[in-house]
Amino acid sequence: MPWSARRLAIGVYSWAHPRLPARILLMINEEFLKFYKERGSGALDQKMGIVITEAQEGRIVGTMPVDGNTQPMGLLHGGANVVLAESLGSIGTSLHAGPTRKIVGVDINATHHKSATTGLVTGVATAISLGKTLCSWEIIITNEQGQRTCTARITCLILAER
Picture 1 (cartoon, rainbow, N blue to C red):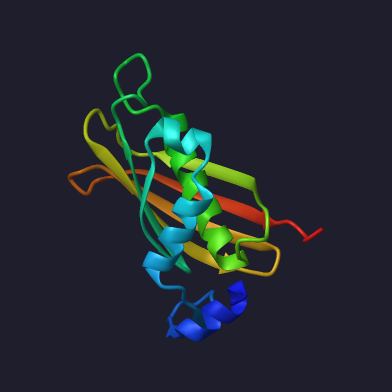
Picture 2 (cartoon, rainbow, N blue to C red):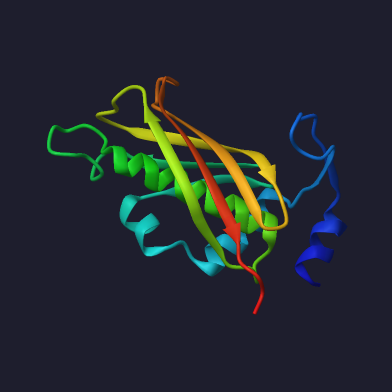
């Protein structure tokens, strides 16, 4: 079954969000996670230890260990937060666009609020806008105590099929 037909067959999810359409097609979390595992995560995601724990259109959740991703002072490297944010936004855009489309990040920014020194950080990417060619996401990263450590925003471009 084609990607779009499979998404249509699964059902429609109503979502009250001021900047998104009232009806957003939803893919079952397990089905996307299976697709993601079959396609494989990128080499950088693997080096960073990023694990996707939830995936549905409009919301992607992933974790990353602090250990192995620190700067010389022992704090989670700010660039590691950006890698997590870009991975979540790109995966969310891929879910929106379908498996045959290529995705590239075109803009990203991050504000670091608090340091993390141990455990896992969790990133929750929430769609701001899901369009035909551009998707924007807000990513909130928290430590194991639920404290916000970083807020990021990414815009991804869905490349034309060739």
